[in-house]
Length: 493
Image (cartoon, rainbow, N blue to C red; front, side, top):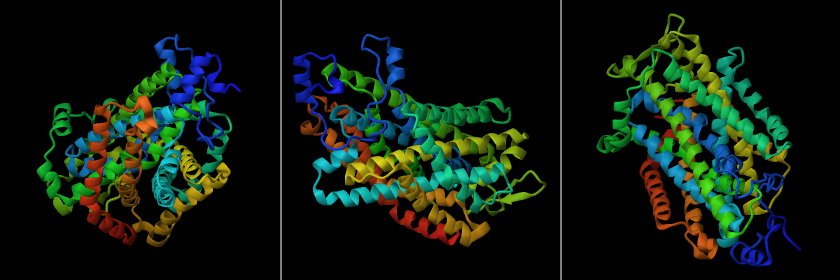
């Protein structure tokens, strides 16, 4: 019987397929979306082929500009100006390396990272790997829920933060409606939300006359940071760990290796190489856009807030637009402060409205990919299948609970920014459990055969994993203290 992905191939080509790319056993990733997007003929124009492959990395990229990124980048720019811009650049570069490798694993093996882990790692690793990934997804979903809730609360002041959290828990209905219509519609909606975020920040920085970036100074801190200053400041280190966790997310590695299989990939040698080439290009482009967005958030905070805060110590304060001042302390909620002060500082209400609209788009786009990632890891590690709405309710319920408890108990003292930052620190700590298996698989000729990456990509991947792990170990005490402080309402930094 001829497999659908081998239609039109000669007998010799099918034999080659069987040798280099055997059909995966067991369930496929994202069964309802697997192999649903057709690809043009290899003779088609390059731009048509690129558009056909484009999509998976765009979905993955929204996790790199979710509300967790907003909170960490805002705080970094406001407190340290451009001094942590190099962290945004380095973490984005590390993300590109790891996501290219994850996409390569999915294309070559026909399996996602969770399925490969189940097949090639000892049986006892399934539960800890699955639980750690579920914990990371819940932490990420917490950031998305909290970010969306804050955006609703800011856009509609009559809605309390507690009620806004409950409203965001219902966005499962939107996701279910989208999945019913296929992969391309999901990708189109995500692309629209990403474009909304990008347009909002383009206007904030390049259209509003009060915000003019200092490109030479930005370039200096991007490529030549002061590392001695960095390691002497424990607040800067803890924030950098949160920024890395907000950018390089463990569950995105699982998700990307599954999403690339939504294309109807031919499994002959030339088709595999074509898929690898265009997925690499798409990943680089999509995550470069995410880097620009993250850098824009940090730059906006550096331009608008840092001049009002540097050198004034405990007396730091920003105007709230109603004749009053907002005191800036270690416990400052930078997302809410940004919304309240952008308008008076820049002299236009549009500044605050654009900020809130972009934040809402960020939270809603990320919530879609979080559910898809949860489906991938549960089915891949455990071979459990749940209806999408059940899966979504479980994930969102786990994520919403700590936020509801915090807001319900602390009330006005509840700090969304600190909770978001702490959730990103948790993501950074969970990264090694996803990075090292991924790198182990793609480094193995037994798993990858002739498609094992070259030494440059492998060295970059292993160095990335070691750097992130070292940073996690170095900053673990600060992360623990930050978590305790967050839920006491005394500030995460």
